[in-house]
Image 1 (cartoon, one colour):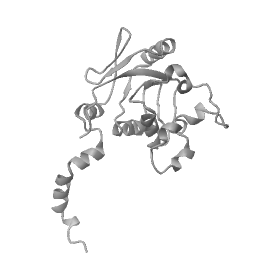
Image 2 (image 1 turned 90 degrees about the horizontal axis):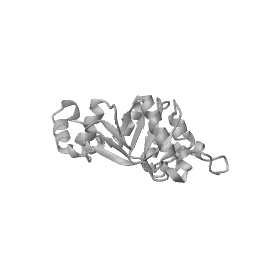
Image 3 (image 1 turned 60 degrees about the vertical axis):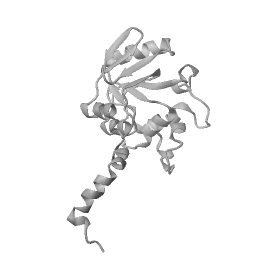
Image 4 (image 1 turned 30 degrees about the vertical axis):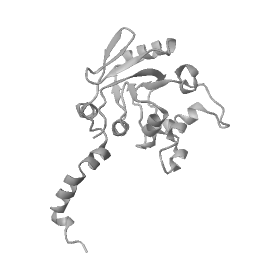
Length: 201
């Protein structure tokens, strides 16, 4: 079983724009890496650096957001190709949760498998949070998956998450590999009783 994820708190960074796809989150040329170990270094690489490697104006390059562990985004974040490298980069950069207006379905599932809740809020609430982060980058943001709320300043805002994903985080069943390993004996027992797994030469 994986760890249960019920509450996440930290500083947050706003990443503005609709339809931010996985190619922007993780440029295709970095997919040649044979492990995910360095993916965090490539997060939003082409938005963060020019062709000579010089930093561009981008929220992740700003010192005021350097300690952010929660990302705040707009509509249909993570659309495009289904590359797992995008949520891997987000996780390995140091983000523990994403708050957005909506997410591409495959991206959402990949985030769950990494233990990164991607929860939804209405656009006016997203914009209000982004505006407050811009004026107060040290703002503490708290995500509560039990109460299904995001809290900051004196505000408590409702969030949305599918029942399946919410249960996976609250029960610690979000890591499918860990679930398989924890049930190895039962899987082998079941497999041994299936005729089509028997009598192979």
